[in-house]
Image 1: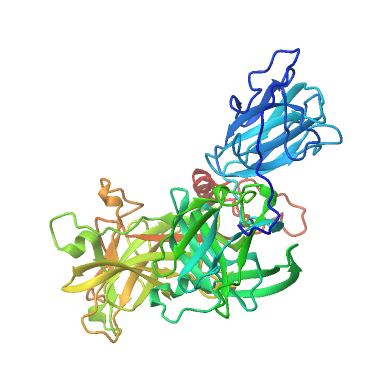
Image 2: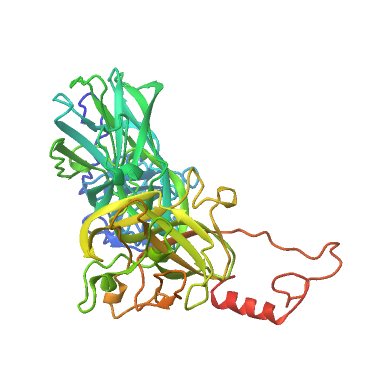
Length: 599
């Protein structure tokens, strides 16, 4: 930590041995807290010993009692003492000698109960201290913990602005050769499960004395509560050698001067990373924002500012020193490095779409017997428009009957030695695709290689993930004014991912089967189907496996249909589609929506 910064002192909770004429409550000391859960807890601080209240209290002799709470899920929790009969001070700590996450004196009225809002991660343990204010006597406590609603999530993720209280080193260089060493800080964020997110930007603030500041922003996966493998990055200066398969994961960083300085004279700069093709699934991630000198001056310094006035959103940050060349990182909790640091300022902005069907990851091992390609994939390939080479493997998904939907995002796994992967969308019934031509065709905009290679169809092919989503903010799978391809509610659709071998000799392509069949052939809807070659004369035939793909959608918000024009005639309750006629089809439509769980 930069020594000239005015660090906020860590909370040292010293327990007093002051006596009392009343019996001490069982939870008088933080080492013996009362365990509480979501809801209300009755307690008393009568007879409690006087010890230091939270930082917002006015005395070092407030009678206090302690409670232990473990967050059942990630989200925002309101903790308050409304209904208590004395003037309370409420503080939340990470432990008996830990960091104060939040403190409040009179949040529910002057000289009265207290309230705090704190974001906790699933399984996070905190200690709750309820104290009397200014040497006041204790009294009856009503402690209420309001837990987030099921499914509530912090979206988009905003970790808070720079609170100007502290900062931690996060840069390449720092007194040494910036090309060789680094000291970086990481903080975490969550995206709600069951969704796909198009990440548009991550922004934050650094403090620096650099003449020409540069900065990078790195996103890492979560690995057992610590930063793991890099999943995406954005740079001030784009690296000269970028693997083609990584282009969709790279963004650009812009830096702007705010015109503000810290008390020590360091400039505060805005750092913003922008992506146009970055998609992340819901889950836990970590972000690193670090700076470096644009003039390669090893003595210029960068610090990532704290946020939230010591309120932890998610988990406390992590710190690591590393060698740039080897990229080795050994993480240490920020609590052990920076006194008064917990969270760091940044904001994640993006768009969300709901996963309609995740058919699972690809199968990579054969199960014995038969040709290898029929154990892990179905043929799906074409070359130069030649009907004799055209073969497709397709699999099914169904749109809920509640409303139409726009295609938002599709990923499909293909074994191929070709550079182009396309996708065709077919209509069809419950069992097979229709025999007509595809209703839509798309080209993969991102292709991610794996290192998994197999010999299929006499050629070595690599397992690749193809992603289809469209261009520009708010557009996924173009069409319909940039809202995506529109799907009809309640209908069956079949998609086929295939390799385009035009211009390549000995090209091969196979739509990968998923790994669900390793679990006693768990099939989503019906098995996949194959057609061709030759495509023109063959019919779709069922396979015995599912394919590896994922579909995400935006449901269409249809306007509520009112009464007929003029408003004189009431709408018949049996007219489900509000077309002015009550028919048997209305009954079937209602039952289909009812059993699908539609309101």
